[in-house]
Length: 278
Image (cartoon, rainbow, N blue to C red):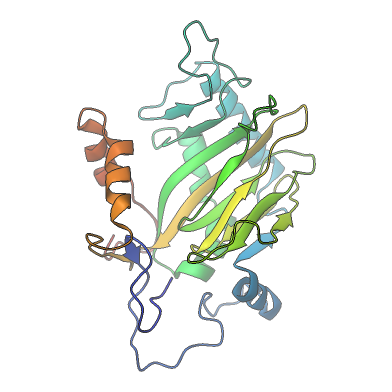
């Protein structure tokens, strides 16, 4: 996202460089091309998200689903993949689709990695980032039926441009999110978004979002990737309101000092165009 005039950037790095004396475009958060309609661009400006129906094919989704199950069943063990679940570390736990609720960082899994290379996805991503696209964190989420502890609830979060595709054929219970970074009232009304299999939603970097409890008896799967322009650049967050992020990132990515190194080297992938800053 471009820097706001007269304000400090909100995160660890900011969007493409801007000049203060340039007139603000009518739609500052999307770029001129022949992909988005006027109505779509205005909706994204007003609401901070854009839903594209049936963007991801059933065939691709089934390939991703099968690969996820294969990883859950230990039939594959891609280098660096992080497998997460509420009870995943308990002894004698049988790892399966019923116990794993997320896999991430599957850089070395050819099938799941393929999602971020889909031309139909990158075509829309370019509307927000421009032609030089980098891909970052990638996840496949498997929301299990809730056990009554509300553990299937996804916390609200703020990220980079998020591209998320629904993988289940049934209607997905609401994904809840709301605008705002400062003075945000958590009791304010939230927008509910219902998605079908293959639908893809693009979230603005400043749109805080999450998903509700899975009250069904089945799984709710989705696959997502975070994209940005390679023209983004880092800022020093020391002595800012974002300084806590530095400690959090180091804590998450430190495994005897090894994982931090991997994160810095491998986290950014150029999907289209060229590497400029990141």
